Image (cartoon, rainbow, N blue to C red):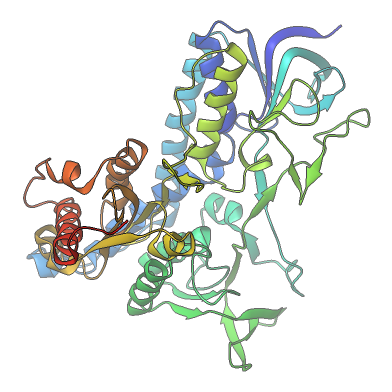
Length: 479
């Protein structure tokens, strides 16, 4: 006999645990099924551990030039094993806090492999056998797994995904080749470069960071090259071979074949929905390109079964999954939605994304809304405010070179529709821009707030002023 719940959630990552907490607050009886650790990939093998290692390795990197600030040490070195222990402790603290909230809100956490069966039943295959849970609703939030391309030699020892790197405690990464120049690739390249590794990035596209703004990607590429990272765009890894070390054969944009000896090859070519073993033989939800097909409320083709996060969304971000989890629970409870996943500007048939995208390189990258290039493709009349962070007082103090802040405004109303930042603290400051876009603020309204001096956020003020200066020079916009 199946145990009855209002909501059964498969997957305890950001989407799953956020939905569980929201549902419990709304009085639902909730069960969460998780095969591995509470917190999913993000907490245990993704966001939290990666950012912990970025922080620790960044401190070591800063110490390499501490003499510029009048700080001298006889020797600066690092212990990678201790860095990993620091990372593990950060993960543990985060996971324990989720566990505490589950216990406080009386959410049942059931360990085992969740398999969807008919009539909204979830079979749980655990260590002590099988049990069955039935929900008024079922929410699938099983996440994604690393996508490994079919490169000859990809199965060799020393060819790994980021999961393996984040769990290794021995340092043997003096030379690293990273296949893939997306978010995972550039963040891992930053960690290795901070720790003095010789790093090579191989990217199939003609620029790093895939669909991100080309000027932002170009700025980052220049900064990474200055740090000594080798970057090959419009290139591909032909094969990986093993001799006394691993050898990557790379075909460059001009057709040359290069050989790179390395101790580690990191596969960072993205992630794909993890639907392995998720469905029993008695259910057949509709799929498209490996993802679950959902409607506007995230319901799948199976009545009463919903899917969020990497299983259904094009945007693979933890905060997107969490927002979707909240959206679904509020829909099920008949509550007004507290999250806006997108907004439609008045009088325009354009969907304007207000999802912040953050990359924790040095300096950080953060974007929200649309870029100048995208706006023009929509036929929008815009004006752009641009500010080079080389002129920023805080950047001068901290000796951070390069970077900029660009704000995109709709020309007639002067409403902000996009922001791109590459500078320290960009991932914190982007929240202000997301709030401004979500509430339709104008350049004039944004300029009313003072920004303290000296701060990185003064760059926002300067970019606003640049856009308003452009408006004055152009005169009233013609409709």
